[in-house]
Length: 454
Image 1: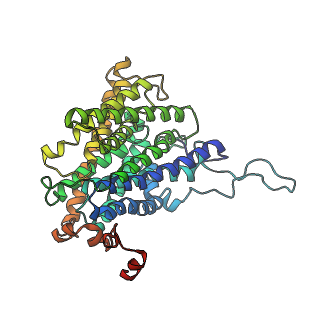
Image 2: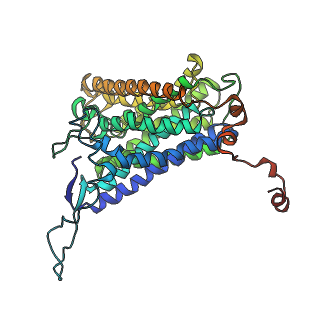
């Protein structure tokens, strides 16, 4: 996507991308409810706060230098864009010196040209990509629920966004453009397909979550003590909001209101439906009963897996990806018990494994009848695209995991990562935020007595 080029944006494309940006932002509160419902009642506010705080922290960093590191010219620094190119949103807003041809009856210019990213204002593209950065950071928090200091979370989140997410987003999403600026190597040199962030978002966050939970250690009592979700309706609400917002995530990544957006809308829906059903079937066979938590988890697994591949498959491919993701992720969430790592809310099992599955399946079921126009192995394309997908996935996984380990150890041995045993027993809502989600003392009280108690 070439930018900045001064011109007049397409109003239809701009409207769709504004809506898509808002949809993707909604995914983070949806994730907060999804994660919040899965933890115990004494930690729900802390869990929600980790997602919500990512919105503020990453938003500031993105507008200062994050967008520039992701989408600036990478000719100088190679692995990331020039942080100064768009620092503080420099060169992003309209330039009053550029006017379209034509004047009104008074001789005044009729239109002001603005910097464009394709057919939309560059400002809209900046905001659309910001929402991806926010939710990627928020996703990590599910792996370390119930035991991480909130201040340490903010430090880790800011450093990880800067050192890991911003460069990786550039690798995957930043195209070489007509002005001579160089973009990311995964997109432009490797030619791996990741339409909306299977590597940059899900594998990236999943690898970071794994590293962080390994350094942080297990929750007290895990796995012997039951740590059941305290509010399954919250989980279902969160899953519904994520599904709704994901249409902005995937269809919005077309960058315009066009056929590619329509195709990705369809494939996203089909994969999500089949993944949910596949997860429920696995639960029925393995446990004897399907669950609402399984349905919600299957929805997210399908959304994760179709994210990289939604532009490269047809309806049959989307259904296949959903079935594989739902079944594989349902089985993968049990790995933490066998391998002994406490991934609290299954970030590894759903996002890392689901992201890998969806990324690799591009190399198997991609069809040249799709917008991406690439053939996978099952459509006569050989192993070439599968190899590219594997290299892209492995590179992001390794980079994120190694850097996340370093960051986690650095924080652990400086300001500390984990709350005290007493604070963990009390609950992080009370110990970290001095508040509780539920006022159980007032249950059964009349309005008059509740006022007196307050």
